[in-house]
Length: 295
Image 1 (cartoon, rainbow, N blue to C red):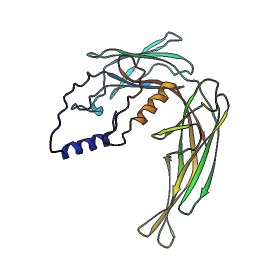
Image 2: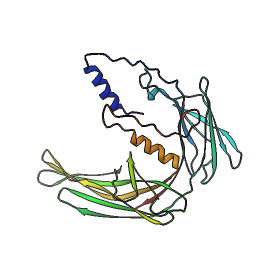
Image 3: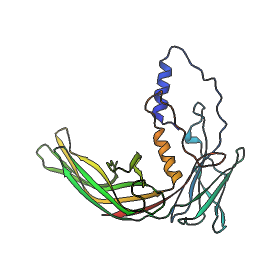
Image 4: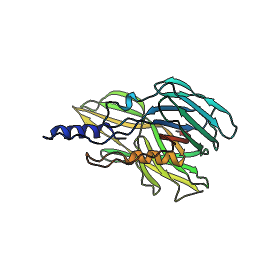
């Protein structure tokens, strides 16, 4: 799975060469791809697509599959559902996902090998508190947000994310206020915590190897800057927080870690195999619980 920037760089590189290089290998036959991360206390919401060879005319945007048979089974109760299609390769329905429960999914589609996977959902971990502080500098303000929770005895894999309500004030050249706006935005969190592992998207990931079964305070930070342009100045301050703690299954954690590792650092970087726990296909059948605290 390579991003569009890599494809653009690779194409420009090939165009600039005087000699054309033809690919002489064979593309792998497409297989079904499952994107199914179950969230506790929510209904299943699954996406089914097909794999696309990177030199083919197809693209991930047209790879979604409708009309598949998606069987979803609670292995603890024995109850089986056929998920309904909502279009664009998405399937939903069944029952509310319960923590610590075994589930199985099986997907069939004409012309493709049937894929399947089984998981045990994660237990809920409660985010008990968050606290914040800030340090003002000449050109920016650094805000610190700490996530407090009790880790359970088993091995756990976590991610945190943060949305803040910002009040942005705009001034003219004479420092008169010309406008005040508020909006909720997602922050890109940094962390110096020793358990920190990686970032992907809006999520900051870590695991409990150094605090298993203990009270944990995971520390993060982000920056606010003062912007000046065309005789005006713009400042912002945080007036509200919405902090989320995610408890992830190991397969889910490894899946996001492998995607993060797969981000190319140049046109000649080697792709990394994306973690999958799907039999006869690709993708992820995972589990997550979420706990939110607002200030």
